[in-house]
Length: 82
Image 1 (tube, one colour):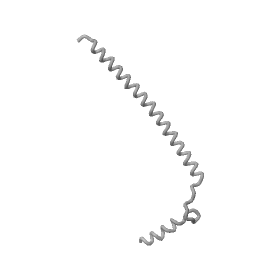
Image 2 (tube, one colour):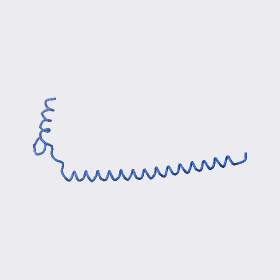
Image 3 (tube, helix red, strand yellow):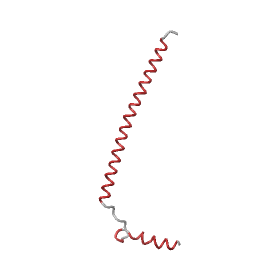
Image 4 (tube, one colour):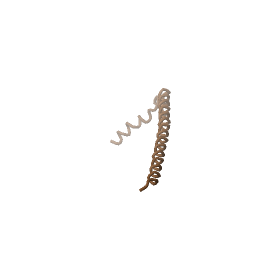
């Protein structure tokens, strides 16, 4: 069984491009497609990072407003007669 597997694998490994022993070069169309896909992914990542930064800034501002309101409420509670 192992011998049969070896006999099948050897010609596949030696076939290469045009029966040469080197791999076939990737077609230019495929390279262009992959470059475009990579560029779109990079742009999407940058856009997501920018949006995340904006949301983080909004969240920080909202947290600061909550702290300011809580501080104001605490100072008002201390100023009220008991």
